[in-house]
Length: 110
Image 1: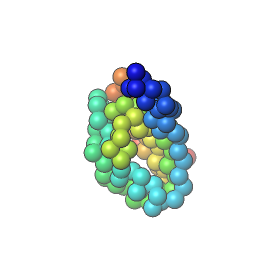
Image 2: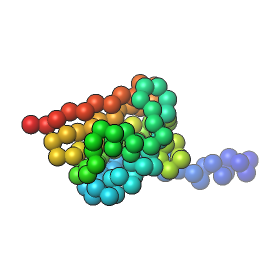
Image 3: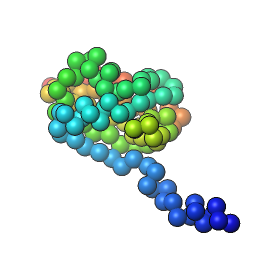
Image 4: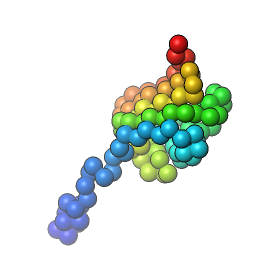
């Protein structure tokens, strides 16, 4: 019974990641270093590595939303499912989610 009382006080919403938008390059790079993606499709132990490999060295915009049980932020599961990193006209999008194969797409805006 005590176990049920303990779990009833834990809010499930507190376990989910809230959508986030960042427009500071240093903060963006710092956050990306703490994101690990596992599961099906694209995986990495540090999303920062992929972003830098693609030439995004001074991102000006970052947005993340959704929830993915195979995405981790600072070692905690259920991080964001969709990530967008913009550096001027280039946008890197990582999309996934529960039961979906994660993929990476790079586009250039006009």
